[in-house]
Amino acid sequence: MRHFPAFLDLQGRIVLLLGAGEALEAKAALLRAAGAEAREATRFDPALLEGCALAVAAGAPEEDLAALHRACLARGIPVNVVDRPEFCSFITPAIITREGITIGVSTGGAAPVLARLIRQKIEAVLPPLLGRVAALGATFQAAVRARIPSLPARRAFLERALTGTPADLALGGRQAEAEAAFARLLEQAEAAPRGFVQLVGAGPGAADLLTLRALRALGEADVIVHDRLVSEEVLDLARRDARRIFVGKKRALHCVPQEGINTLLVELAREGLRVVRLKGGDPFIFGRGGEEAQALAEAGIPFEVVPGVTAALGCAAQAGIPLTHRDAARMLTFVTGHTREGRLDLDFAALARPGQTLAIYMGLTTLPQLRDGLAREGFDPGTPAALIERGGSPRQRELRGTLTEIVARAPGWAGDGPVLLLLGEAVAHGALPARAEAAFA
Image (tube, rainbow, N blue to C red; front, top):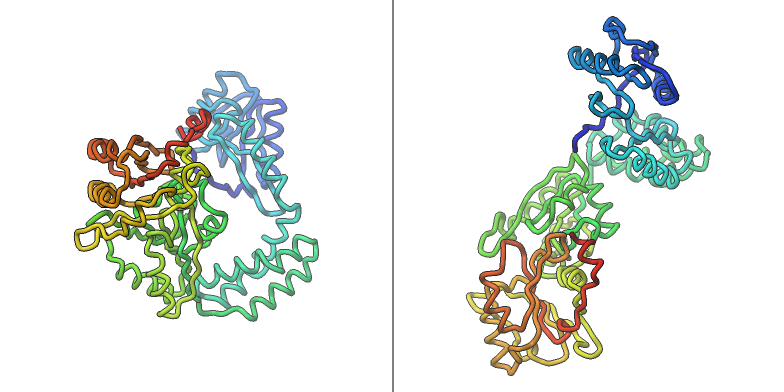
């Protein structure tokens, strides 16, 4: 992020407008709408900057634009010269307003036309009276603080009030009824916060594979407890002020033991916080979400599960590999490659049956044991296989071949990312569309 977004209070403050023309007039109209007092000039004189909070220029001689830029930098005055980024210490975004709500869209000066197009798309979906909802918050701000001193409880109340009946009435232009509905909700509000935990699947890594419910949970969370498989791209979608707690695990290396994670979730919820336990993939597929749900239930903590795109689905889709195929696989089996007391404790007879695809999670280090166990049950080691690292993310890469070839080549191929093995005749039916390569570049 090259430019830090900020909103300036220009009420009653002087702004220098240097130059002439339509571009400067457009800026002047916005500045006056924000309460600024315009000081207009066609040529630059350093004395014009006395008492100014801001300077904007367009249509002035080149030497004046350069002199204005130098003088503003020397005095610490923000300056913007329209369409001349080399003379700007700040840029102005494309602006959307709704009666007190202001939204700015910026491309960092690289493509102002694109910023305007984005503004138009946003304007098309925002209700015309959205500012009336913001007015509700302003009207009851002091009363809400007095009634609900706890910040998490206050935030939860406002989320309900500003998306529920009071908001609907305000959007319909029925402001008096909206205020009455808000007041009734406030009378019923609990002063003490109530904790809540959401076990959320973050999907395989790409942020645009999150579900809408997962995205909403991230935007509402007070605390996010996440593992190492959750990408920064996904975490960046969370509320900016949400506390993050890393509890990641790697093979044979646990940052926080599972029992400690269970206890942490319970303790955070008992503090009245809204907690998101964010896991790569789906929380109930090899994610120990079941153990965490059980611990929360036993502690009497309300919770919900938000499913995510599990690794097998993300890997296969991006690799163009069908997990089922009417000519090759009518069954799909999810398998964990983790050992138990040093051995791979799997039903190899069931896994060796034909007509299925095996999706084997966390099985990189146990590939030889997997091959040998399947071979004992008559499984063909020449069966098509694909080893996929960082599946479902922009960094996905694949190693394809037979099971025998994969086992031989895997140690030299694998990196430090999570790996999934897809095994079965359906793997040979994969066909990655040419356009997909560009999509995931």
